[in-house]
Amino acid sequence: MKPFRERNPVIIGIIGIAAIALMMLGAFRADRLPIIGGGDTYHAEFAEIGGLKAGNEVRIAGVPVGKVNGIELAGNKVRVTFKIDKGTEFGRRPAPTSDFAPCSVPSSWP
Image (tube, rainbow, N blue to C red; front, side, top):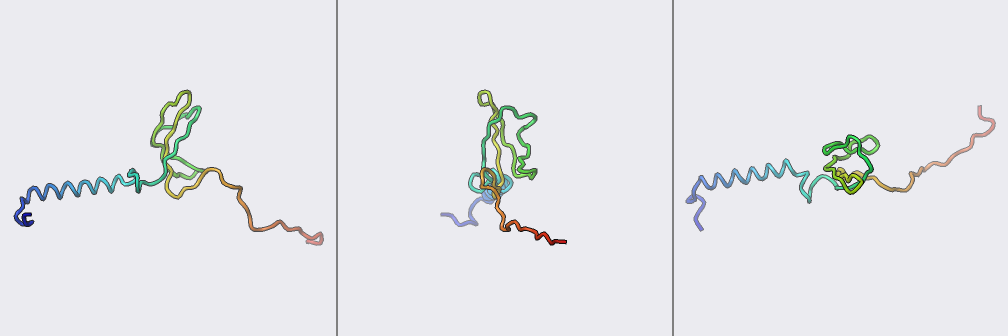
């Protein structure tokens, strides 16, 4: 194997620039990578979607939690694909509970 100093500096420069460009592309597109990509993808079917389009925000209780990735026809319904940010919980859960019990007010209360 040739020592580093004996190699063609133009080829080394091209390979170095290409490696840096690939790392930058990966950094700017990291949210789309399957391993570290920013959330979970879900699909939902609707009878009609109004003005919904790809790129719109997904909201839960008015809070933005993701983006609509795609819309396609699925028979007589519309299939919407969307991504929810990591750490966002939604779906069926038990009813909320409280730690305090109701109290009664004595009849002599002012």
